[in-house]
Image (cartoon, rainbow, N blue to C red; front, side, top):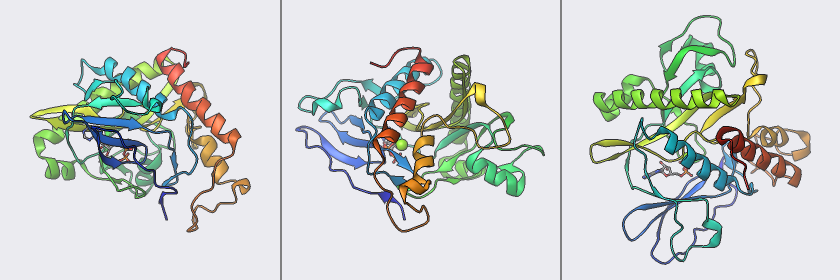
Length: 299
Ligand SMILES: Nc1ncnc2c1ncn2[C@@H]1O[C@H](COP(=O)(O)OP(=O)(O)O)[C@@H](O)[C@H]1O
Ligand SMILES: [Mg+2]
């Protein structure tokens, strides 16, 4: 079982047409035909969108994405038009809303990995490959890869796992030229992100980008280099050989799998509400990621 514990109701805003509610974002179209992307405080874990929100999470994700977009502009154009809240929208949208170019999205999750963990580790343990790419012997959970890899995946509907696909499959789906451009852009943006994060004591283990076409041009879309789209590890605690402490969801995952939650991941039951303590610790982690990366204080 998976999905939304409680499906959110979209806001009714004059002049905006509700298009879609993703795990975290609600999408609307404005009268100019642009996309209005509103990041909620929803949190997902273990394939569920939890019934409890993390205050400010959507704002942190939005502000962090904006900060990164401006640091990546020389590498790739992005979809942001403005951060203005549309007239008539609820005040709560402030800081979490981006007006974006509506793009023809490329149906590929563009993942870059500099370290081995997660689904990459699972594949490596079975076949010594990640997305079909051969890797040396002896790597363990958290090992740095000899060089960053482009490990694309196909996007799953809410609740399903994204599926890693070989590069050749991406080329078949989107064409050889686009596939090559996706790989080049993904690795370039990852490289920049990793360098900046490293200076701030954070290992950017892996991350996921989404691109879309504006005419013939590939544009960086969605969110970028946030704790939701990336694995950030505190550099001073990085130690290959076991799961690394994750920056954001660790408290939630640990609590959900603890006896205190009373929840069984493998059951048909939806996960319970999070206690206030876990909400506060998780909020603090998102804020810490923002503050460490940007060097600015969250107020
Ligand atoms: N510029 C854009 N044009 C069209 N769609 C976009 C754009 N940027 C992001 N998206 C889409 O908006 C959605 C963002 O909502 P989100 O809650 O993150 O969804 P998901 O549950 O798929 O992660 C994603 O489906 C993403 O592909
Ligand atoms: Mg998303």
